[in-house]
Amino acid sequence: MDTSDRDLIARVLDGERERFQELVRRHAGPIWSTVRAALHNAEDARDVFQETWLRAFERLHELRDPSRVRAWLVSIARNESRARLRRKGAFDAASSGTEDALVDPDAHDGLDHLARTEELGGLRVLIERLPERQREVLDLRLNHELSHGEIADALGITPENSRANYYQALRKLRAWACDDEVTT
Image (cartoon, rainbow, N blue to C red):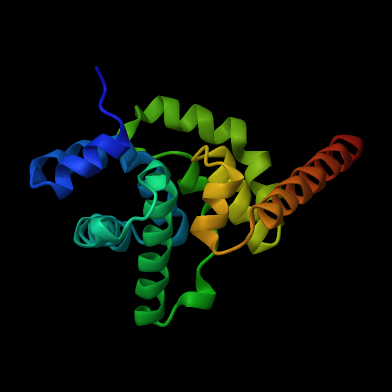
């Protein structure tokens, strides 16, 4: 029987520190995707991935709503990524990294990754054209399956703003996809 995130967090806070690894296993994919989307350097991404989990462990007692642990973790990952970029002086030079955000290269067979990359290539080009906030919301909603409330928590916006950015992104992608079909 799976233990809920809420129960795992309670157990970790009650002294069962080894149980934190279960949270890591459960949420590693979305956190890796978040970090990899922000950082194109694989070494930096690995470092920030580890820093994210260290911060999460250190601050676990600050988590107000354990049912929203994934949004909280994504928020930490985004903040740690931005801090790394600022330290390197490359904040403005980083792009969204949608290609890497969609797939964790360490977690998939190489052939599956290549097939998926080809299949999604056209969509990635369109996603890159979206404004940053719309790309962030779209990524968190589709790749991380966060609710609009969780996205709002992670990005520091309202759930309504999350919904608006999501639907605007979808509307633009549909329109651009239709335009591309007409021109090809």
